[in-house]
Length: 172
Image (tube, rainbow, N blue to C red; front, side, top):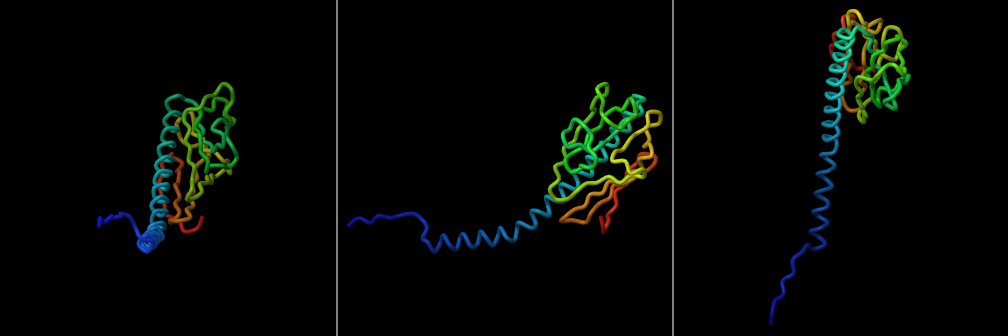
């Protein structure tokens, strides 16, 4: 009589394994979303700060107004769509729009999933403009608001001197 040994799981073992896996996923998923939201916030904060420095530096060194504006198609500025992305361009005729003689210096795809991004400036203009002479914001001091669905929301304040600081906020 030969004994044949079969390897595999019984139905009961499979159900227990799946139940334990489902419980672990239910516990880990909220923590995963929390971690991803924290990473998105850090990325956006760093990206905005470095982009503002780039724009300020180009305005000062090239003696031309430089604009940071929201964009949907990464070719033209839009009214309010910071959640998709933004671009930086040299604005030679000072109309805050990209014309044929002007070129884009930098684009950034934000693609936000865990929050929204908005700019609120002093002149209710949806873009930030840096002056050609001093490299300072032209009537554009204000704040970027990152309103998170999972974390404490942040405000990135742009001063009249072009410096930034981050603050926690309760209400967006």
